[in-house]
Image (cartoon, rainbow, N blue to C red; front, top):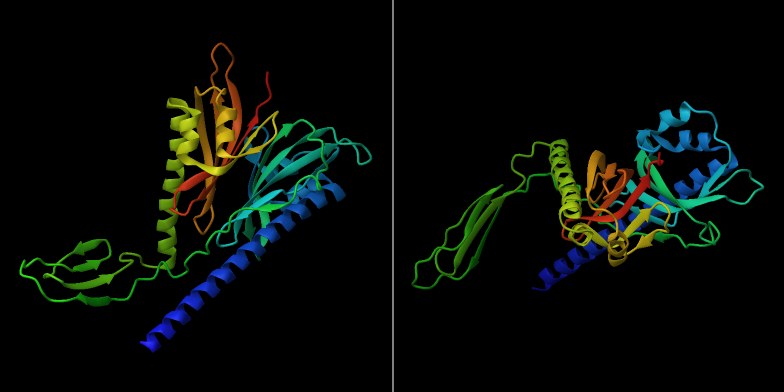
Length: 355
């Protein structure tokens, strides 16, 4: 008995140590992403926008100008923009595998280095590690709003999102055959109770208080790559299903139903001409007066390798009564909750120029 207790204590200690190590790794990854964002902004200020973006954008990146375009090609094919673009991360969240994350915060624009900013807004960047582990920007978008009346870097403290559990690196492996006997033989009812299972199949047998169980898991998974392919396909399906739930409820029912169906409690809402807000009730209150008669045109999506953070993007065309249709580019950032359901954590729309 004492030996069993010692083994149990040791097992619990090992699990706790693994969790603490994973949390430390996730915190380090988030700090590294924030540092990368700061380095990106510093290069923009010290040199030029074109140099900064061609350096930090991933090979296949997306910008919104105003619709989605190839980021590297956009900057390679245009002359060096005038003026100084500066920004700072205020919120960063990283996936459980430490390879994927989001960053958002304020930006400013100056016509010249010795002049005061003339434009202000909020950016959203999606990052992923590449090559030897360097962070690179997969997608970048944002909004414009009035002067917030505070300094770019001293106005908001840097905040980190919730920690995500590190993925189980052995999840793909078939479970070894196991058997167990439990209970006490007895009773006159002759009922059978116990189970035998293989993969997705199950059969049960037993007698009174007697039970036998045998199981094997991960049947049909041929390799780690096969498991990842299946998991990617499944989680992409659930991500797009959450997106469809949001857009269908918004159009067919109400903004309230849409956000409450899939919105995170700390959902961030970004719209041109207004300051960003945080909170589910605030987002619903802000969106109540917005037209719901709109069409969403999905253009792409992506997901972390640990299947806990993801994004979708495309175009939204609103059809307000008695007015011309209005097009915006949208990006939705998603995280999984503790139950494994996708939750909308950031909703940003940038407007197309009006004719």
